[in-house]
Length: 406
Picture 1 (cartoon, rainbow, N blue to C red):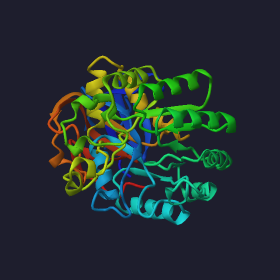
Picture 2 (cartoon, helix red, strand yellow):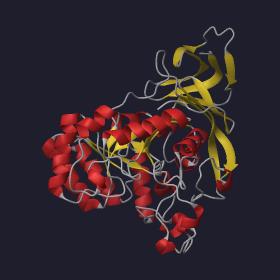
Picture 3 (cartoon, rainbow, N blue to C red):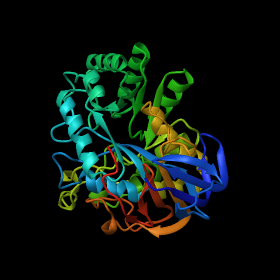
Picture 4 (cartoon, helix red, strand yellow):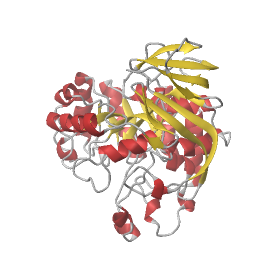
């Protein structure tokens, strides 16, 4: 495998405290050296004036394949991820059929090995058919390669089933990412997690009351984490044009006070993860009357720009906090090795221009979908290169490699 030198960038890895101008040498799919290494004959990626970070990770992505390829595919969704600076994504199990059996995990991982531009991790369903009744075999799903279990799109309504799911997850060492369906259900699940002694991660937190519940649980030392989406951090219900289904999502946009609570929670580390909840739909589906259009918005290609604009440049959160929420926070929530800029680490790297100004143009996206609530918005901050397994898969907006790895 060829050598790659990322030269002269600001090396920024908040988890290790690294913040210095220098070079990164990549060999054999791993980081070989940091600082000012000898790199004769290496391909050079000039990074002067740019931020060189551990590869971004999004643990809440809908790739739609199999069953809904008219909305998105693993190929198009991971091209969108690479364009947005994400080196790793974890895809939700609500495909058709749902990913509730080992062979369905194998299927998506094989598709990823064939078609993906970035690394794809698969989540499994908590319940058979995601119907909230019979549990899946979490141990078998874990052995098949699932990194977590979720019934995303639906909460597990039955408390007995949820308690059993937590016990099974503990036995299988399987992380659970739970669909948030309001404060009452979240309080129930926090209580069950404490009772069983197994952590839970809450997806797409959107209400101030939900933030408060997570903060209280963490103060009590409970193993609870949560994520915010870029759209809930940047928008509130007042921002949605009447009848525009590109602003219809689940959970919906909330009040300004909820948005402020989310921003403060990310800045303060109460919510340790930012995840896109990338939910593509075909244009004709989103063109239906508002109440008939499917909920969900895309976000892989705008997440970095939105959070850098709304949090970092706005002075809400510092760059280190935001980078942690896009790297170590997601990895910790799924009990995975965190991406890092250090010798020996897998060479997943994101290079961004924090000052780049650009206008969101969904018609130019790599995603198959166009249901973006930020269309026409001017953002500041954009990925300029994505490196996966030591290979540059995106450079200056161009996708230049396929079949990265599953």
